[in-house]
Structures are given as C-alpha cells and as structure tokens.
Amino acid sequence: MSSAPEEITLEMMRESLYSAVVCDALDGLGYRHQSPRVPLRPYTVEGILVGRCKTTLWADMYHVDPNPYELELQAVDECQVDDVLIAAADGSMNSGIWGELLSTAASNQGCVGAIVDGAVRDVRKMKQMEFT
Image 1 (cartoon, rainbow, N blue to C red):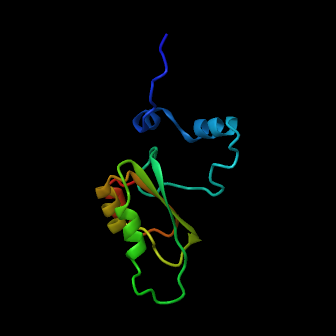
Image 2 (image 1 turned 45 degrees about the vertical axis):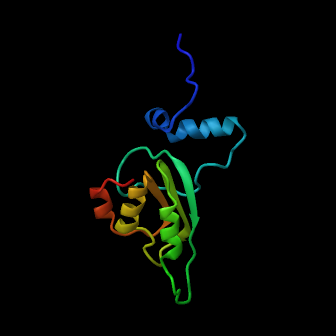
Image 3 (image 1 turned 90 degrees about the horizontal axis):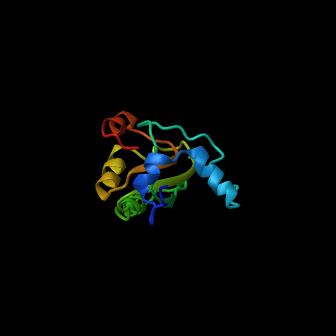
C-alpha cells in the first residue's frame, strides 16, 4: 500500500493531471467557475502546461504610449521558475501582444509557458524554441 506524498510537486502534476481531473477536483471543492469559458488551443506545442500563474491584464490603447513596452517587460522580468504567464487581453486582435522576443525573455526567467487571450505573433519561432 503506497502512502500519499508529503508534498505534491509541479513535476508530479505535469506527469499525472489533465484538465478534466483538475476541473472535477475543483468542482468537488465548490469552485465551479474555474475553467475557461472560451476555447484555448495551443499554438506552439502539444502537451500539458502546469505552473504558478503570473497574471497580467492588457488593454487596447487609443493614444501614443511614451513607454509602450515598460509594463510587459516588467511582468516578464518578474517571472520566476515554473511560472505560467497569463496575458488577459479580452481577446483583442488589435496588435500581436506576445511573440518570440517575450517568449525568449520569459523562458530565460524560467517561465514554462504563456496563455494569451489575444493576438500572438511569431508562432513558427515559438514552435522552434518549444515555448508552450
């Protein structure tokens, strides 16, 4: 008879979990509104993305921003090992907010992937670097 581990690690989660199991567990705990209401399809790799969420909120700008990359670079610089950067952009297709350069910078910080609710670019390059 095996005993439960003292600590459940992200690596263990990556090996064992999938979305249906996570949703069922959350439902069982009373968290019934935790899964996305929109389809999220992978653009760069097939697989499981598990990590701590680094959440960001993006908004369309209708004026010239004197420092247009300041906040996104700050968010990426604050990423830690095993983070998943979440870019909540309300599905905006007005500009490609995520691409190869931010993926490279995030990966260098130890970020394991990004979920972007908005336009992305450089998908071929991100596939080559296997950034999730």
